[in-house]
Length: 55
Length: 187
Image 1 (cartoon, chains in turn red, blue):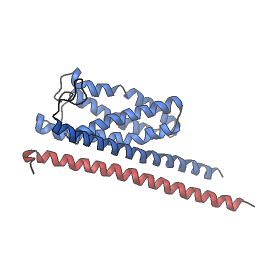
Image 2 (cartoon, rainbow over the protein chains, first blue to last red):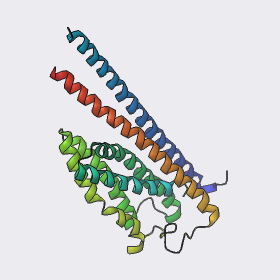
Image 3 (cartoon, rainbow over the protein chains, first blue to last red):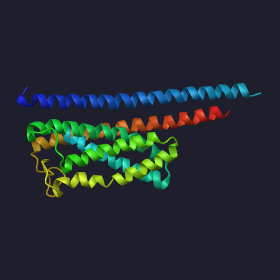
Image 4 (spheres, rainbow over the protein chains, first blue to last red):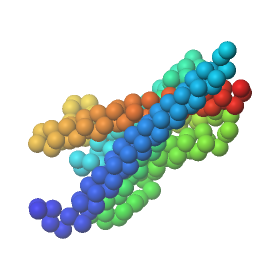
C-alpha cells in the first residue's frame, strides 16, 4: 500500500463508490425483473379471462 | 481523482440527459422520452451524491476541510437537489401525465445550473482546482494520470448508459403493468 496517511480517505472513497454502484445495479435489475414478472402475470390473467369469456 | 472526477462528469452528463429527455417529453409528448427522464433521475442523483462525498473525502486532506460553500461545491449540491426535487415532484402528483409535465419543466429550468457547474471555477474564486481536462489548449494533467482517468470516465459513462437502458426497460414494463391493471379493473 502506498497511500500512506491518505489511506483513511482513499479507501472509504472506493468503498462508497462500490456501494453506490452495487445499489444502482441491484435496484435497476430487481426493478426490471419485478415489473417484467408483473406484466407476465397480468397478461396471463387477461388471456385466462378472454378464454373464460369466449363462447 | 480517479473516482471523483468520473462521478462528477457522469453526474453532469446525466442531468444533460434528463434535460434532453424532458424537452422531448414536454414538447413532443413522447412517452419513451418521459420514461427515459423518469429512469435517469435516480442514477443522476446517485452519481452526484458520489461526486460530492468522494470530493469531500478528497478535500479534507488537500484543503483541510470537508466542505466549503464555494461556487463549484454549492452548484453541484444544487445539481443533487435538482435531481432529488425532480424525483420528489414526480412522486408528489398522482396524475402521471401532470407529474411528468411539472417535473419536465423543473428539469428544463435546472439546465441553467449545468454551465454554472462547469464554469464556476473560472467565474468565481474557489478552493476547487481550475478546469484541467476540457479546456482550450488541451488538458494540463500529465499523460500518466490522464489515461487512467479517461479509462475510468469511459467506464463510468458505459455503466451509466447500461443502467439507464435497464431502468428505461423497467419503466416501460411498469407502465405496461399499470395499463393492464387498469384494463383488468375496467372489466
